[in-house]
Image 1 (cartoon, rainbow, N blue to C red):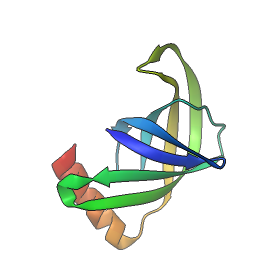
Image 2 (cartoon, one colour):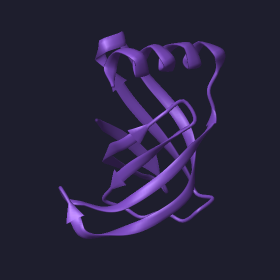
Image 3 (spheres, rainbow, N blue to C red):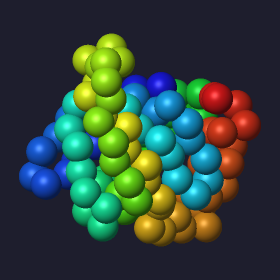
Image 4 (cartoon, rainbow, N blue to C red):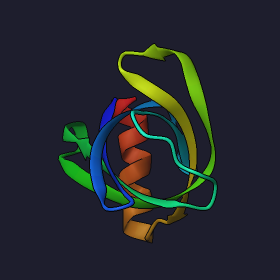
Length: 97
């Protein structure tokens, strides 16, 4: 699923390769170092919501060869999900993925 990300004053599109309530594996055109923070924006039309989640990079690795124009795999963990967002996110995972 495509997502938008904001990191280091840049907005870019990424793709989730794996997504859960605690974090995600992103395919990204940009590499990030562990400890850097991103904001991930998930458009979830199946639950009629847009979710914005702050995340911390846990690891990043260069993809060789590139996958659909994405050069990096980036593993992130979410920094905070409010109770309302956890409920929306759980519903999203159950119905959209």
